[in-house]
Length: 249
Image 1 (cartoon, rainbow, N blue to C red):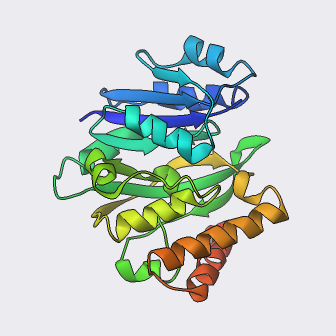
Image 2 (cartoon, rainbow, N blue to C red):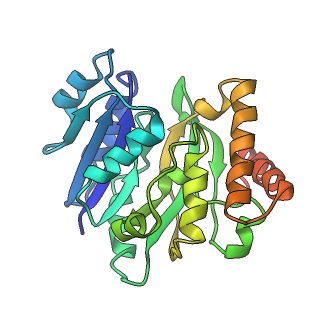
């Protein structure tokens, strides 16, 4: 089973080496790395060419935002299964993609997801937040549940059936996409109860108060768009993060 890992990056030279190391360590043999670089100016492209996987599919060109770049990468991917790995994220162990392929050997499963850890930017060994995802149920969507997006791997057929990410979102396109996959896309998910990805704290959604407000507005738009709830769903989504800082579900 060919697994395509898509990386959308712009000026990520500072963190890319760790991410690339985690890909090199994977023991799943049939792996494609698709990189969509947004015309970086910090040496990212040179670093990728020097340290990237053999056969890496690299394109560097301007884009209109993160979801535009992700869509371009997915469109170029040739794998049976597609997941995302950002420049400041790492796969948590050498068997992550092998586990993905093992579960998706069952043709009745459309996608998999697992647990996620947020680590300190100045010390990647220090875990700040542990997101234990738990099993998916449709009813959980109304309570604000979602799978950790960086751990989500889907069959190509899901994107063919449900579409790519909506580029009108600047921050919450991943949440909107997952709600679409899990409602109109009729995706059958399997939970892998292991940490699959470690990502650094300090993403685009919480860099400022204005960004947090925008994210909440976009989250609410996605919730209403896909008919999974209302303001209570948004509150549940935000409140569910608090126990993750204490190592609880």
